[in-house]
Length: 263
Image (cartoon, rainbow, N blue to C red; front, side, top):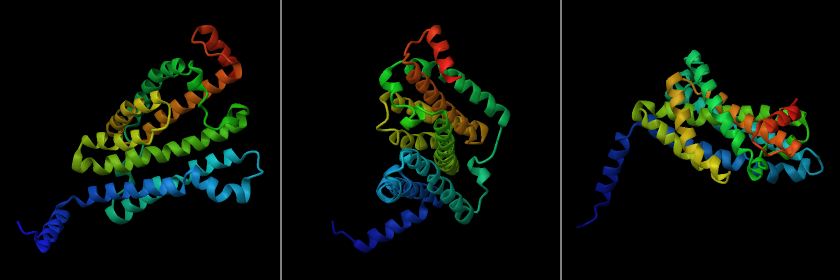
């Protein structure tokens, strides 16, 4: 059978024209934004472009590295998506979950999520290898002032992280895919956990789905920020307390011992 180049091109053009423009824009822009994040707003970029020139002799270079990463992610994960929403879609950002939504339900579900997760964090942190990974900034274990700065940066990062997946991507694909949008955003969310502890990566599958459901139920990604940040803060705080006390037990005495190290 003879291959008709013109007919193939014409058919391809027709297929492209038939695609949902908003969904296509979401898919392509998310891929572009994540690529920008990987190459330009990452810790790797900071080390390559700023470390030797400005921070090599600064004892807090790691803190600056993490702050660059946390705050610069606002550009590809928040600012650029908002520009697409306003300039291309001509929509309100509240349509993409940037609002308080059903705040009464949101706060209740957030509290339930955190109450459920805290005991799991307590048992997971009893494994020294797990606790040794948090906080990722090691100097945050030594000084509470650095811990506070680090966690503020983490909160900012979680805002960006939740908006790009549970806000921009999930709400942006809702019209075309409905609740399947939860599963679609869950896939890159889990992939980007690769390299972290296995337990955390596998839990990201259920976590991504649960946070997606939470976003649709409340019509906001903000409660995903609170849940995600609350979990990370819990992991970091418990891990610091275990590090300071060298106590990896799970009994009531260990709990009181760790509380004493925090306060």
